Length: 111
Image 1 (cartoon, one colour):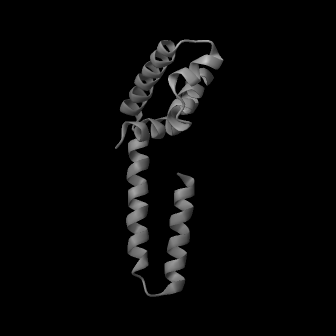
Image 2 (image 1 turned 90 degrees about the vertical axis):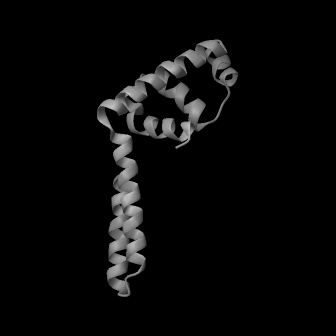
Image 3 (image 1 turned 180 degrees about the vertical axis):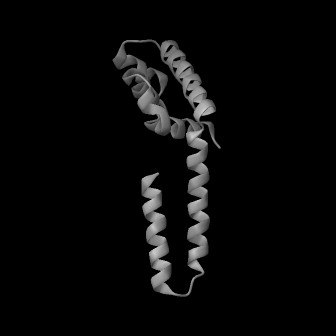
């Protein structure tokens, strides 16, 4: 998994456990793809300070994942739903197939 995608997933899972400042900077860097200078200038901090904050917050997110494992489980659940959807495509009974796909979609929404 690409490093960026990994931290986007971790931010999605554990972002609410971060401070508002940490979460905001991480979202700007990983989700909005802003540069260190673009993040730091409005906040009145240097690029080095932004990078330091990002590295510390990455370590926090990795620690949460190591202890809790939610992001890994979510990824496995998404894969499982994908396999179920592929298997449902082979069902000839359209009513049953539609019901199964509807339940799969509901399960994905819950994730």
